[in-house]
Length: 187
Image 1 (cartoon, rainbow, N blue to C red):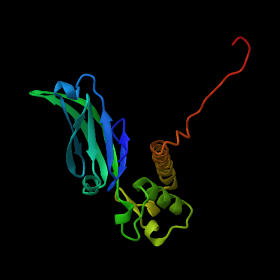
Image 2: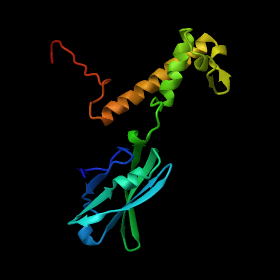
Image 3: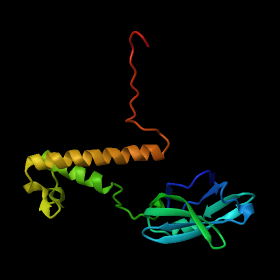
């Protein structure tokens, strides 16, 4: 099982992961116990094991596979007797296990599906389902073009944000990062 230096922020259901935290203020040799609480579509509590001063947490394949996919709040707590301190709070995006998805699964996000439906209506090449697509109780085919263009721009930004986040999570960097330089005298 791979061991990370920090808490994971994304994981596929059915995968196992472990992470190691060295907490100078809450050393395992000092009697501190560490636990994590995951709350979202399901809930899971994880207890760390001591390894010298460090705390090691393991999320098994069986445990992650039993959780429903979705976004989870993750909190890390250190306890010693009646004392308790929260040392970590973040999010974990748990993706569904691709091996358990049924045939015909649509992997697109909500934003991607809406953007494609809006663009299809604008291009007047909409399928029957797209032509009758509704958003906030209104059919897209009945929306004024100006409103559709505004929604298209909004959903383009949302999709671009999702794609940038996916690139960062995959370790590919931020494609929108711009480095500016200036050449001239006196520098």
